[in-house]
Length: 454
Image 1 (cartoon, helix red, strand yellow):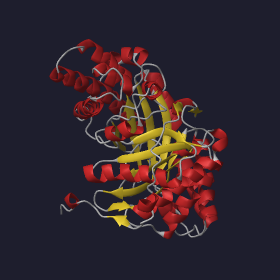
Image 2 (image 1 turned 180 degrees about the vertical axis):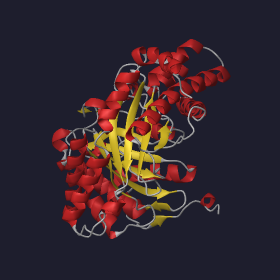
Image 3 (image 1 turned 30 degrees about the horizontal axis):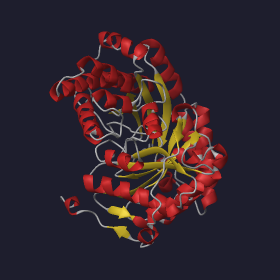
Image 4 (image 1 turned 120 degrees about the vertical axis):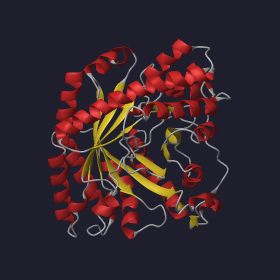
């Protein structure tokens, strides 16, 4: 049982070390909304979401007040819309209309983001999935709270390179359509390999078809807490360091478990998982980069960075899984650039490059996240970056993702500002040698040999 003493113990972490519950995400199945009439489908979707999620934000605020635990975001994820709209949507405009309906529902419920404007063409692309993907630029331009994601591959199926090529073009189009806001549409668009069905974090959250009708998933975060704990074992050996991270991760996860159980009980919706991911913010002291520097690096990006991140990620998971019966989602350490002041500073002084970030994604929970690149970057280079990250996920049997933002009108040395939790980012240079001929081959990269385990 979780008792009030554990809550009291975390007060100092909350007040001084930026500990928070990053999100309560309510997953909602829309399978029972399916209709072959687009107007009826939109009405069903709006009514279902606003009915099931009507008390989500209110409940989150109540838990915050009663336990003095900051819950930064209240969010909704829905069944991938490429599935829900397959019967009714005959054009890209039909899918845009669903995006607008989702946005209205999100605003009615008071959540900051709604995820699930998604497609899953890991092995092949249906007509519905193609239409949804092609509608993404306009959908993200005309909505405020909608997030889109596309799963392009998996360890079991390989990588759908036709979809990768298409997403290179879609990312560039999304950037163009939101160029008046530093191409912010791309900050709400992510592509995956091995996307999980129960991820509570945006922009990649969707309610997988393996899930029950409705479910509560919670994402916890505490980079500042880990950083503070490491200051107490400065100079200690790796065994001591790992024990420190594990014990701290345990306490952080128990907080998430408490919030998840309370939200589940009060909303009368089953508890799904706690996601252990350390998610940074632009706030000073709430940085993954500063944790890695606390382990002993002069700057994140220095030699040893990948090893330090591997150590951090593994021990966060070891500590977290002892604190909750159900752990899922991504669970590890996010390494976004724009949302982490330490990462931003490392880019500015030249210690961190896209190539080093790619190496780090081999051992962290996600991939290339919230990275601003020159607006002149072409669609094939973007597709190549995506393909590289998909390959890392496929071969290593882990989730990887890409959320890059080609900021139209800006080049290396300038900055893009996205506001709020999304923060700001320096424009990073990319390798401009062409991969166009590689991307244009088309077809599918086969699954690796170790995928065949049946």
